[in-house]
Structures are given as C-alpha cells and as structure tokens.
Length: 131
Image (tube, rainbow, N blue to C red; front, side, top):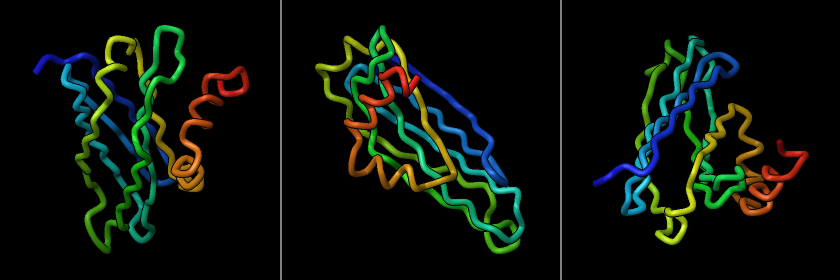
C-alpha cells in the first residue's frame, strides 16, 4: 500500500496529553493511533479527537467520526493507553487532499456538537472566524 499522507499531533491537556498519528493509504484506508497519557493519580482523563483532510486552500474535504477515549488515574488503572482506529476515506476525495488538521481536546462537549453537526463545523473551520 502506498502512503498518500501522514500526520501527527501531540497536545497537552489538563493533567496529561493526547497524541494522534495517522497514515492514509492510496486505497482510502486511514489508520490512526491515539495515545492518551494521564499524569494524575486519581482523576480520569476523557478526551476526543477528529481528523480533517484539507484541500490546497485549507478547506475541509472530509472528516473522521469523533472518537472519545478515556484513561483512569494511575493509582486506579493504567495511566497511558493507545487506541488504534480506522476509517475509510472516499476515493473521489483522495486526489484533492493537500493537508490535514487533527483536533484533540479534553473538553468533550465539543465532541457532542460535532457528532450532530460535523459538516457545519467543517464549514465554520474554513470561515474567517474558524481560522
């Protein structure tokens, strides 16, 4: 499988970090790993991630489903966990892809909004307000 694009982003969150790495193949298969690290002994982390694929003008062409992941505090359970996930990107979108954006956040309220309004959110991201 030939790779079309790869991406990575690490982000500090309240008491830990999230890091997502992905590979998109020429067959449209997107394979991603999201690692959630928790530095707290007692508090759990719940966070979320989506991947947006962009054209040459940074307009969103496609976005993954919102993923929600959690890690318990270190005294309770593992405090570092990696989640592997996949999605299929439509083949007609592939030739237009020139970039990506990975959105990760510990505040999962925005994920609930995304689940219902993904296309509207992607349009907002492309607007002057979203820049």
